[in-house]
Length: 226
Image (tube, rainbow, N blue to C red; front, side, top):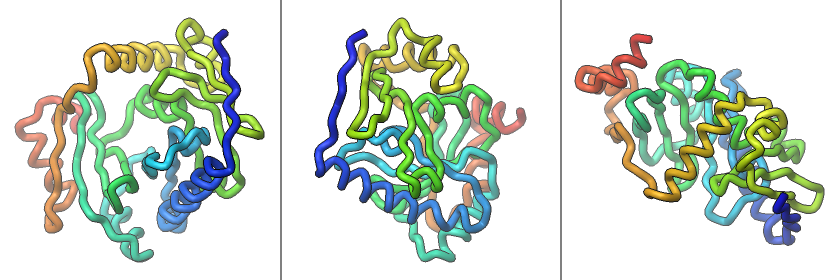
């Protein structure tokens, strides 16, 4: 196994701390009203960079008006909002951005089990984990397994280790194989466009725009009806 031990610098620990503190600040308005949320990817694992995004994800279907009201009560302002559906068969999600690299995402239709498990594959953490300095294992976009250590992390490629990785991350082996195929294809042909992306005007609601979009988007309409 081609394994590397990465030791974090003092600067890396500072960046991680700053990003996690900001993530907690963004999560608190939701947890105050008992809306479950999490962060995933490098911020959960610890292998962050200066430009790492902070995406607070709400895994279960919620009234968007409740989400927006919770943020407004805490003085968190959005700079833009949009609806994105990656492929016709994938769940449409709403996005509320508070800055260029920070914001919230949430499903606009119930997620399939395989869609939920993606976050476990990348590594996910709740507010209490961030506050307790917990880091979790997960797989990055290079298809490297990241296992946190006291001084940084150990990383190794996951090709040929689908079963082992699935067991550690407690996800279905199919999810691991699917992500390997998707990311390897992205390396070969590049990132392709998304099926649907629609920015919302300040006066528009997510529910209104979603309903209108579904009239001419069979893939979106099918997910809404199912």
